[in-house]
Length: 529
Image (tube, rainbow, N blue to C red; front, side):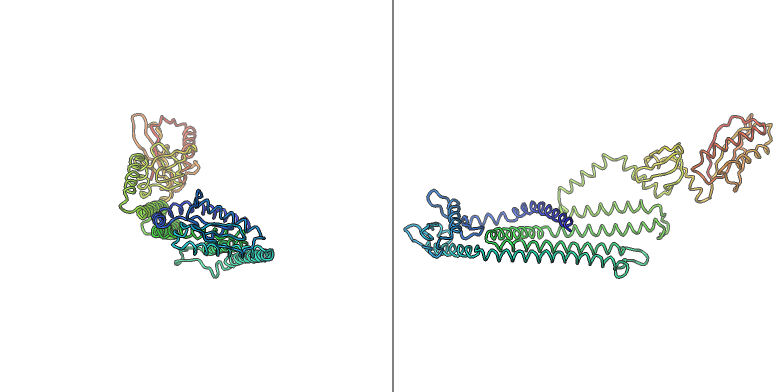
């Protein structure tokens, strides 16, 4: 419990420190004119204080003593009289002189009241001196009564009792929050149900339970802060020595809250619109993500929409929504006619156009390739001279792992300009595809014999399908030999290299056994059906 409170208090103090800086600047901006007007209307007085309490103000200087020096000297004399319990506080005397009035207690002169002091508050000098004397006497008597040992002991007992009650209350509230959280966990799936539209789950019961428990914790900390806010000034006010600090603390907090209120009132329309835009964008994105996730799984099957398009389409829509939300927020904060905002958009546009032409071409090509549905991740393809398995695809690049376990990254703009051979696509639609190889045999050998050996060699090769059966085509009749093309079916495109190798080995062995010479082959090609 202590660690949780400690982390929260550190965060709260850090927040207060940042907010104070903003509020200080804002309050200066809001109240600068009022401060100037008040300064022009009134004469500044210096406070006479006793144990943190302000009794009254002095305004005029006396001789070489400024009003500030006078206030300090009078406050010091009152502090000395407060400490001396032998002083008779009922023996307070007001002596009216020609140009000033003296106030003394038990033959000790405390201060003088001048005509300048009286003019500052629009009172007669004698009436002002009487008010000052009454304030001084009442405050000194009150402090003397409160600083008696009996009263101090009562204040100590009262503060301990209140502190104990507060600790017990906070502990009970903490346990109540824990009990409520356990009940929420118990209600999960029973009283707390998932929010669904037919079979489509929008918010799970687990997420709703987490939200409820988070709200409860926030309320707990709010109550804790409010309680501490009232507790600290009240405890300080029980003791005369700290009562002045209590009033200063309350005044500071009230001033801070007042400044905060002014800032909130000034910025609340912008903050409200910004929050609404962010919340709408967040929940729209969440709903779209769930929708496209179900499309990707095959739960939802829109007509004419391939499930492989789900994630790329979601990313494009997400990017568009985020850009629109940012533009709305910026227009809300800076205004539609803001020159800074317009120049910012112009600069950003120029930066994108000038610095990333190739990236934009790859981005556009990536979108075209996705919706062409040329290949998917895991397909075995050939792009120009590169052949391998697709292991990664984004809007900018496609990554292929070759048969030699080398990863090749190809920009999408290059992919769009190249011929893409997809061997896996044939497996999906036709269940197999054709591997072919060409050999040259002389005219003396019967073509029937050549066909028989080639088909036998194919059937001995692993991963060559027996059905559909292999077949041979006679490609051409050249001057010295005939070109025979062996065609055999397989459903293992990713093993193409090893299948060809074993097929060629079997062809060599079988023709050697038949004592038939293989003439130099012209070429080897891939033929897809």
